[in-house]
Length: 142
Length: 441
Image 1 (tube, one colour):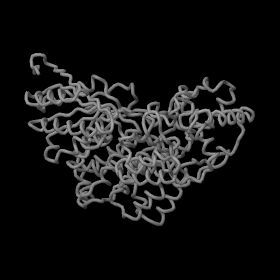
Image 2 (image 1 turned 180 degrees about the vertical axis):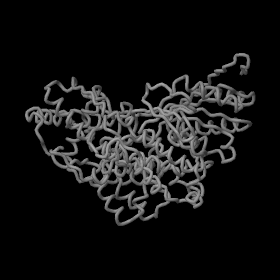
Image 3 (image 1 turned 135 degrees about the horizontal axis):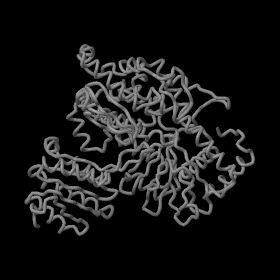
Image 4 (image 1 turned 90 degrees about the vertical axis):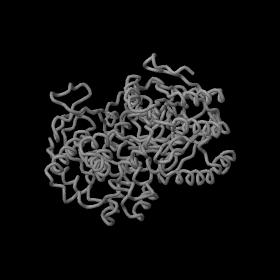
């Protein structure tokens, strides 16, 4: 099943009520590699504080290992800054093998996370960050 | 890395991008003269990645052991051959070949499920309106159930700490770290609770595939299990630690379901609800001869024989993490897909395709099977993954039409490709024989 925008929006709304930060990460064919890297670098206790929802590309007529085309990562507390550092390490490792273009769409972002991710984007030209806040009044200007 | 098993042919396809290649494989890939070493290096790499390795082999095992799926594969193989013969006899140019095969969508046909009472459910098609009083609603297909079983089994088999196999918390963490299909598990979890769901979902799925309607049977089995649990009839059973005899319990419930027919048939769509018996299908025949599948039957019979002598093989598909190592590794080594195609990418424009497996089907016959499968897949738009092509010759006049999608012998120069001549030969053969029998089916 591939989410529709409606499905994704419902997931985002659900997560926004429970976490400080909600963002979608996408790195083309490398998205799953990125998500696995992030989750493998977090210890169990940190991982328990994070929700990961994958947007799985799925062929109904083929028995395939799930393919991740995007993932929602919802975080509470300072773990979001840790994840920013992990993403940066992944980008640096990846650059040795291939170009790594990444889109991070934020739906809800704490101030400290906003600063960290803005710095990340400024250091990596191939990282794009979109800010999509459902409530315009709560937009964090970066 | 992208991998999948085609559930009509039960051939495994694996696409490995440059950054996923181990150093040894990458080095050998640049020295294309030594295919045997390349194949050995790839097998070593693949074996060292237990998640993908196990997930795909488990799908193949489902084809060997689940009566509905084995039956589906045998009948869909026959449907594909018949479709090829029919299209060939029409005498059209290849790029005009087109066929509608609704039977081959059977696994992805979704059902809607509503929970009405504690242990009462309603089942409907995609357009069925919700019944009054429905509490929960889910949509699920046979494919969803197969994927759920593969993901849970993969989780349980890859846990280092045995206690984690039954831990919902460990499963939640695992689902964050690895992509998993869990639609079927979520239904069971909501109805029975997460502790029981994690250990009974796979046996429930396997039981559901002992019938002609897996989604219906799944929900009937779930309802029966819920009733037994609520009435306290499973208290003794549940007081034991894992591995409990889930497969035997589910088998007993399967035998008590209300079926619409006592006899089995050979229809992929429109069968009355009935129990499917694997033993009958493993040795089935029709007026045209034995009903077999080129890549399943031999190994399915082998598994069946082993299960008579070694009890572990009876429970291997339901509880693979708990069976004795000898049986587990025996199945992994001996009962793996007989044909896998592995596309190793040097870069986006250049790749090498290797064949892995132990099929005894001669190369010439394998190429003919795959030519026919390719054409039918493309003509019916079922079983083709357009994003992952075996061939990289974009300049070839056959490339864009993609009727050659599963043809495995990729030459250095597309002008040397054998697909057009084999297709012409087969097409002419079937056209002139007007659907007569050959050794192919």
